[in-house]
Length: 497
Image (cartoon, rainbow, N blue to C red; front, side, top):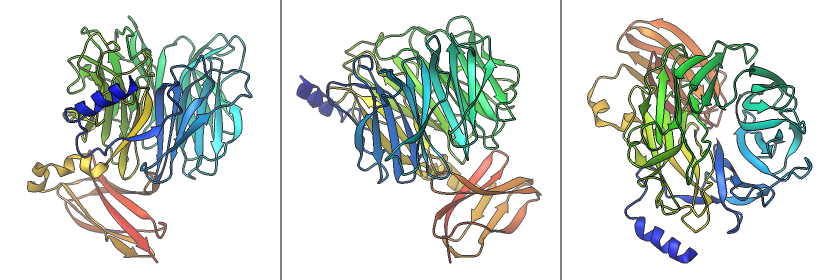
């Protein structure tokens, strides 16, 4: 039977081929035909890439799937990761992050009782500093955690009840996860949360109630010490679980401090749709809810949005033409992007290179797309080989962006930026031209998308200018970004001695 499914999938590959510039799909992680990988996440750190997944059979087997690549996703090693010290066998809701020192942070929920953190300082080979992030009480419930980090600081949010802290719980660590401070972001709400960081460090927190309550958003400008009043993004939502999806995580991204985009799954129009709303004033007001492009016919679920270091937005979701969904549904993974903070979104393209069926109803509640300075990278669960396993694909950011559109070639650019491909230090010379007056800033990122330095250039009149950036590392590929308002331009450079 498995061979028959593989044959059918291969025959359909010509119909469902991945669209350029997405790479051919690679099997990233699989721990056996008796286990179906479920919800998954990915962290990108140059050539080092990590992925995690729980299992549809999580009540039967102990552990999660852990995949690791050291060559930019070309090849992968996968294994079962588990922690038996907590006395609970059910591993669930994992996610993974990488910090500025290339340390890897793994989070895993055990049953619904406790969320724990693990640290690796050797690129994900060994793990230490295991500690509870949430309370660990026999009566407590923890569900749907997610986190973000910058520098030494990690921010995590989840819904909790039955313990000394109830509602939407927020935890912060300022020492790379070795200790945690827990507070209640809202004592009166439950529901699924989503969290993101803006470029300057504003924490945006989203809350998704199913039924009559709707979608809400708040923010913190002081690292979670205080929270702004909740703002209604959409007053009502509707969702009913079915084959392939249940309790889907919403997602949120802030490409700038004031521009924020939220996505979630809604079936108010009769089937599952990936819908979104955007704010241009730091979450004070929100646009009317709209579908993502090509997200109307059939069933769409497991949507995710992320922002790259240039401010571009990248969307990913599952699609099937059949409705209602069933074990006979053929699934594909769709991708779209926006270069204007969600004001317009490109038509979707296919990310996976063959359609697939799922042998089990549980395909997880989230699958994730991330970016660094070079690539958008995605991981998802996929049943093309008979059981659900994790597959990986990537695409170069420059190939995904609207800079490839010929319309941009013929017009006079508002900003132009020139840096030498190879420059001799100290300092990196930067030449730029401004078509009209504006407030300018320069920032430099490494290959993993981490900001190395930024300079606020202030108000500039139209004209040509030169700056010299100092304090940059030698021998690394650097990405220089010039920003004026909503317009950015990026160039690559290498600084040598």
